[in-house]
Amino acid sequence: MTQPTFLKAWSSVFATLVFSSVVWAAPAKAEESFVQCGKASWYNLRGTTASGEQADPNKLAAAHPSLPFGTLATVTNLRNGKSVVVRINDRGPFVKRRIIDVTQAAAQKLGFVQQGIAKVKVTSAAPLAGKNTPDNCQ
Image (cartoon, rainbow, N blue to C red; front, side, top):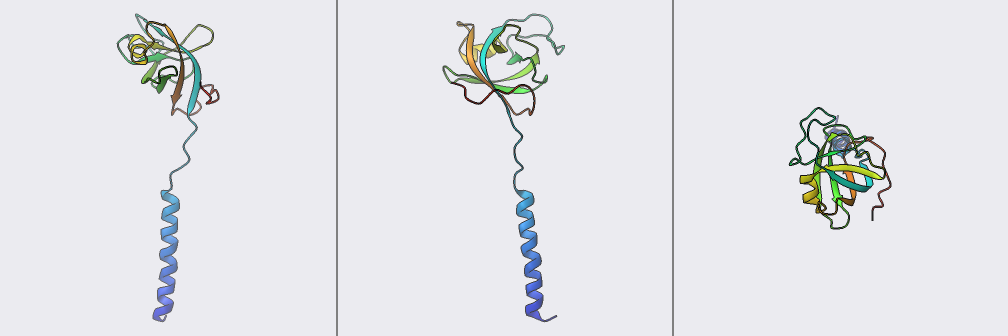
C-alpha cells in the first residue's frame, strides 16, 4: 500500500469514528414530562400518609392522585410565579376540580396559605405518571 492510499484509508476510518462518536454522544430525546394545570389546596394532615410515612406539615410534600410516591414535582403558583419542589407521598385531593394538595410549608412558599387554594401548574420529569393536560396554563 502506498503512502497516499494508506492515508486515504485511515482518513476514512477516522472520519467514520468521529461521525459515530458525534451520533452516539448526541443527547437522547427527553421523555415527555408530566404537566398538569388546575387548582391546588393545602392540607394539614396528621397521622400517616398513603405511602406509610408520618405526615409532617413542615415538609415540602404533596398528595396527588396518580404520580408515583417519591416523585419530585414542581408546583408553580400561576398568580405570583412562585415555585416549590414537593415530593409526592400521599393520595388526593378528594375534592372535585383540584389536582394537588400540598403541605402547609409548601403553600407558605407558594404564597397561598391565606387564600386556601391557588391556580397552579404541576410539572414532573416522571414520564407517563398520570393524566397530562395541555401546557396552556394561564
